[in-house]
Amino acid sequence: MTDKKSYDRTYAIVNLDRMEENLRLCKKSLREGIAFCAVIKMDAYGHGMVEVAKAVEEECALFGVATIEEAITLRKAGIEKNILVLGVVPESQYTSLFDYRVMPSLFTTRQLDKIEKIAEKRKQNWRYILLWIPEWEESGSK
View 1: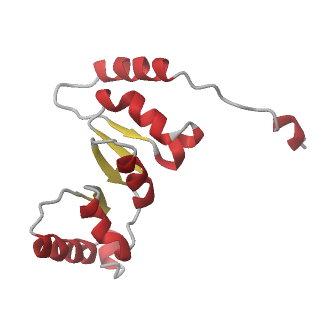
View 2: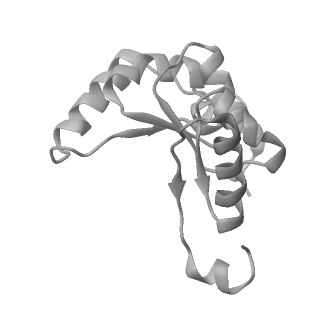
């Protein structure tokens, strides 16, 4: 059995300059026209979401986050790039998508219809990623 106490002093040192350089190197391997999304959910896995976003913002097309709250945190910190929420956005927060210019991942046609109605009412264009999984539609998750 591993002694948990031996992990108490484990830590990571993140060099944001190296992170930016590594991202540049990764992008060189992408084909022309391929956009790079930096997934920085859960506080960039403990490395500081805002700090990481600011360090790599020039090198990526958009950011991926887990929740609408994370997206709002980035907007309030001055991040202007597109932000995609990878998780489900609660219906009570749909208007925040427009208030903070955030793209949702849509998993059902019901979500699409509800958000489309808000867009029409506000006379606002919006962008989203539609994740279509046939089994979900068949199981009644509309």
